Image (cartoon, rainbow, N blue to C red; front, side, top):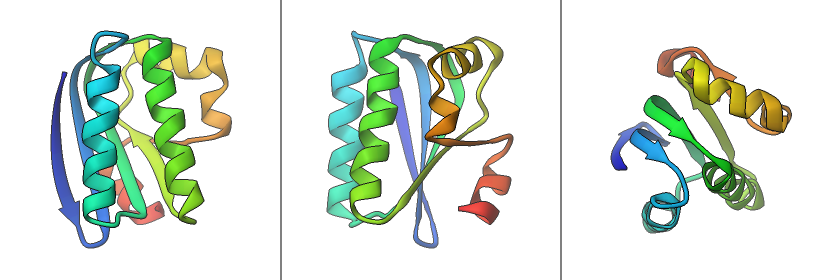
Length: 111
């Protein structure tokens, strides 16, 4: 899995590309946490446009980052979720916890 980090004002936009599964989850978790801590980030958009597959380990990554940001009184949201990954989010009820937006621009306006 590849990660691309971009800053927009005080928002960190993380574009994920590849499969977010048990093989990549730990590395993704470490890289995101490192960047959030280093830059003292309180607003994160996870862009799922390039994610082709996600399993329960990926859910753990999203929930863990959400909790970490929430402890700082910050916000985390997701965007550009494809049909396959959307099913995972719906079945697990993750949309009750994490807001989903269709585009990065929409997420930036609402976060």
